[in-house]
Amino acid sequence: MPADKASQPDDPGAPVGRRVVLGLLAAGAAGVLGGASIQRGLAAVLGPIGNHDPTGLIGLLPVGNTFRFYSVTRGAPRRDESNYRLDITGLVDTPRSHTLPELRALPQTTLVRDFQCVTGWRVPEVHWRGVRLADLLDGAGVKNTATAVRFTSFDGTYTESLTLDQARRDDVIVALEMIDGPVSHDHGGPVRLYVAPMYGYKSCKWLSGIELTSDVVPGYWERRGYSIDGWVGASNGRDDDPTS
Ligand SMILES: Nc1nc2c(c(=O)[nH]1)N[C@H]1C(S)=C(S)[C@@H](COP(=O)(O)O)O[C@H]1N2
Ligand SMILES: [Mo]
Image 1 (cartoon, protein in one colour):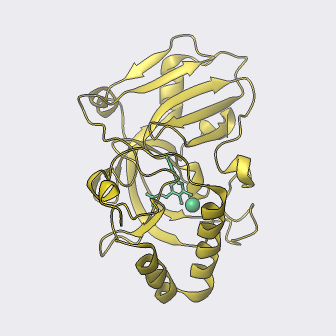
Image 2 (cartoon, rainbow, N blue to C red; image 1 turned 90 degrees about the vertical axis):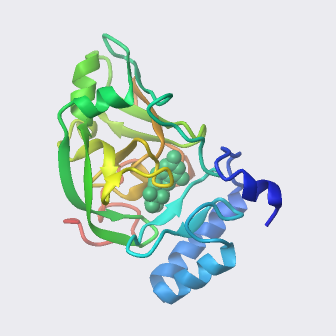
């Protein structure tokens, strides 16, 4: 592994090329077919586990946490109380910029729900806690010309979208906690989106922007072929359990 990458694990990177992305998708499919042993082999081939591997694409997180680390960039810069902001902009009455303490002071919702990546891995009954997206939208006042929400990440590259109706669901939260404590940096902390009824690609990590738009603006993976409506079991043809 090049030393410069090893010593700068948090640098945001340029988006990876399409060839690598396709390789990753193939790797995900292999994981579905071949089970955990192939997933472990894959992680070994791709490099160090748990943080940022040389590709910046995939790893396995520590024992007891069966999430895989996914990032289309080489990670993101670290943000904390001192510099984190969540901006709510676009078609709103009052644009907002929330600090971490402000988000923590708002009413919190707990969800215990599965996390399902469209490539086939699933983490059952994950504890999530945070602010309902609907509450944040109400706080800014959504103009009646808005029909959709666009999410941006401080990794500088990833984006996601929801319709306004989807965004207002009770099971869509701006998560401050995940698993057993604050959302870790690798999982998209300090704040990530969690869209419980949809595939993992909807749950934008390192969330920094919520923009109200007049139409759906397809997100990073949606421009690369994933369904804009990412309902688990009802799209992308990879899963058949609509209840999870
Ligand atoms: N900023 C950002 N958010 C992202 C992604 C990403 O590459 N960058 N990957 C998505 C996908 S496809 C999945 S399955 C989950 C993975 O979350 P995890 O890395 O916490 O396991 O994050 C989603 N959110
Ligand atoms: Mo995913």
